[in-house]
Amino acid sequence: MENTFNKILLAVDETKASNTALVQACNYAAIFKSELTVLLVSKGTSSAFDDAKKRIKDFTSSSGIVVELAERKGKFYDEVSKFEKKGDFSLIVLGSRDKKGFKLFWSSSDVFKVIDTSTCPVLSVKANSPDFRMAHIVLPLADSNKTRQKVPYCVEIAKHFGSTIHILGISNDTGAETENKVKSYIRQTENYLAERNLNYVIETSFGNKVSDGIMNYAKKVNAGLVVIMTDTESEGLFMDSYSQKLVYKSATPILSIHSRDTRVAGQAGY
Image (tube, rainbow, N blue to C red):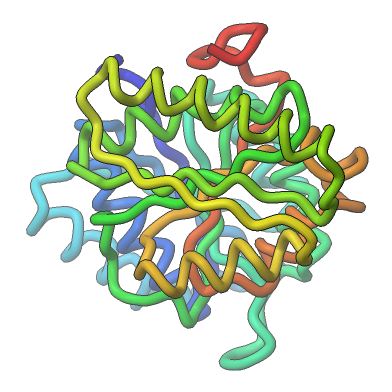
């Protein structure tokens, strides 16, 4: 599906996290041949964006990417939310809060609210994320019956970047019922990937903290992306789930997908 990410919205401020998000957004736009819109949000004067505008234009022109710049003043979440809903975007890219580095313009709660209420997947990138690399993608599978809805997105990205997909069956539970359910989803996903001639490996982790297990495994395999669901794999809403911890702490970029977003996945997963 060539138009998986045909319209990308990059929301930035003047921080280092936004610089790394820019690199990610441009690489996705180049590979998927996407329209790229960069939204710069400020609370007051926008003079701080002068250098950012030049950097964006230099980066995109050297990559052959057509970019549209837009500026808004106000609260980050409010402005991004209004802009995104009018633009019918298929991916949002933004920098997420880091404990180190420059003080972010928006608070972590704003980042989480964008992810939680967006109408499309959101790629969150940390200031300390490594250089862009997509040789390996981590695909966690939990014991939710909707965990597989993210698989088609992962497949499309892997196809475009030539990535190896790391299927990670994971749960903090060690019960037989949970393990059998997760392993069943692994087998189904394995068949799905094999039918599409994609490279993959399989790993399982039971009885450990889910968020820590995902981050440690992503670091171990030098992953360039972790693909997660926001609201179906960890006891309810995104704000109460391991997804929040991953967005806040993971150096590996996180692609957050909603169970309600079925444009690629379909109602029943795949």
